[in-house]
Length: 580
Image: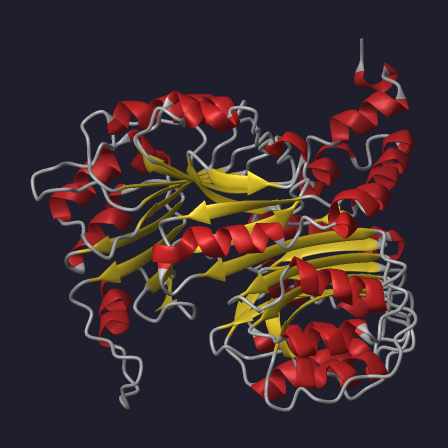
């Protein structure tokens, strides 16, 4: 059987295993039929360059992109410090306005506000662009920079969908646009705080808005609200330190809401009775209500009374019979907090102490079993014989797991498989010599794991890190610790271990700067090193313009390496070993 004899459907399935660069380099130009199928694949999956190596990116831009650029409707690009795809993309004399039929643009890991502005200005020339998604973008900027970004986006004439995931090192907040968009209908702003005082301006500038997802906080100017917002039918929001009157004033202007998702941070004084009144008085068309609130207690001695009062406020006929919207309350003794959420659980994060101290308004007070939406789980437990009480809980789609050792059989019960797990963080309270073997058992079950974070492996100065643990796919290690700095001997053990040899991205805290030289020299596959040196004298507020440690590293390491302060955490240095 030859490749040409395979059905089109089977060939398209095979194409799923190739990156865009691999697909073009392997099949493009061989047969006209293959070329047609490649375009079919790209039209569905998009022109995705995220997994393309730097060398292959240059080849794709030079040999393939010129002949197909007019046929691309969806483009994915990443610009993290490892790939720098957008920088290299521009270096090949490509600009976005050459993608004349582009409809969807997805950008990931942008680290430069200058590059962000350049790209968005290019977008103004794309007459078919309807969707733009900015994911995991992190850079230092001013409030004016953010305002310019927002206004440029709002000026895109046909934009319907916008996802703005921008985090800044300066805590900059979302700025309400002063340009009116006549096309934008779906807006997601997950990581920037929006002031309620800007809510009216946001709505007035986005006249066709139907779906809004954003985080709002109260300020002293939060008194002006828009008139009736008749088009918004879906509202997904976080409230930070908002008050009951603020919430009422927002929802009484949204009479056509069909779906409402609310998370509260820094508890607001709205319980089941107040929510019932808000919904009865203002949200009569509401069909789906999802709630998660966190109530931290100043004094946990009376936690049971607060716990009972909160759960009982959701036991009225309105909740249990009219809508059958059930809730569950969990008690977290670690931070003296009460979590209340609607069932089934509808959020991607879940933190819990086991055995759960919970109460539910579900019939028979059962601990609700379906947590399929959770992909980030933080699992902690007490040594107890009562873990069987919640064995019907199941987390079947966990991708990011944080656990506190020791591991017991209860974990295997509530997480039936680890096939989706890609990131694991490990911590503990008191070290035990059994921990390495327990961790290895978990690693053996996680076939797709690529990132491992270990808080510290030292409970005493003589306790050695168990770098004998193995996993073939782990490429990212986080060994940063506030309590311990690795010395030269530790770094030697790490670099000679299986994990150290295959590691591509390492974050670590070291005793002295010469450890950096050892790690760079001895770890053969290292692409990026993020390091905190204990002998670093850098002060973020210092008036000096020189950076002694960065300059020392530049003198000691090859000039082709990129060496700079981490814009996220100034006490860390980022060293990119493969920038070409």
